[in-house]
Image 1 (cartoon, rainbow, N blue to C red):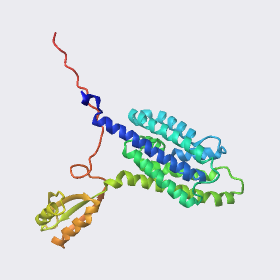
Image 2 (image 1 turned 30 degrees about the horizontal axis):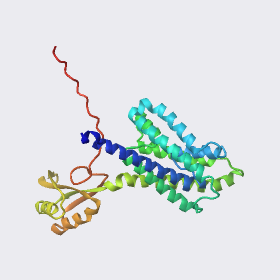
Image 3 (image 1 turned 90 degrees about the vertical axis):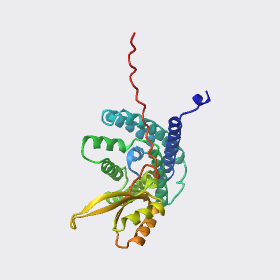
Image 4 (image 1 turned 120 degrees about the vertical axis):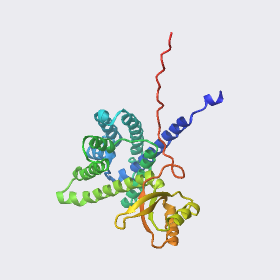
Length: 320
């Protein structure tokens, strides 16, 4: 009876995911509102578009309002293209991020001066906090909308990759800050706006890099492909000393026309130097290739968590 009252494992995972998504969005909102917006830096994404509208209207239309309206419009356009699941998942993230930014910009923009007055330090710190927040959202299967909606649409309708579409979109948004209202000559506009644009590019790059590190950094692994006449000794040493599995593949040297044994090994990034030294200590002439992989999933590595909906099996008709 007690077990029926408790939450299942999938329900607990779902609750934790939503808590972490909200926490990541709060980090993103604070990073943007406290460190980037006060210096009038335009970053990529719909947050950047909202910033453009905010300063173009003399701080009349809040960033959160523009961001939320554009998210809803893009989701309505993308509904048939990207699918119902993507849209529903994004609506939650877009709603929360708009609320957080709405509260954040009201508070931080009402202050007499930015929390960190040095623009460079403030921009870098804000980008790092934003990137950590976005990364936290992504690893918990969340989405905040923005340019990834545009990128997904472009990817579905053309051969342009999602990553390239996002980069092009973000560059266009940041570059648009050059046309914000400015009192002065065109030369003075360039002299003032170009440094701000550079800060926008830096913020967008650093935030994306930090998000990537959160998403794949904790799963970075190394793949070894090893050719050696002493393959048996090396395989035993990797098994016994490095405590890693080894797969032996059959191959053939096309020049020598002789059969060879190929060792395939995966390990965590921190274990790679030890395995390299181990192989070289046995056969200094061993031919080794080493490549980085974003993740290795399975026993001894990371578990790939995916939510699978239970299939509804049809109930057979009962004979009367």
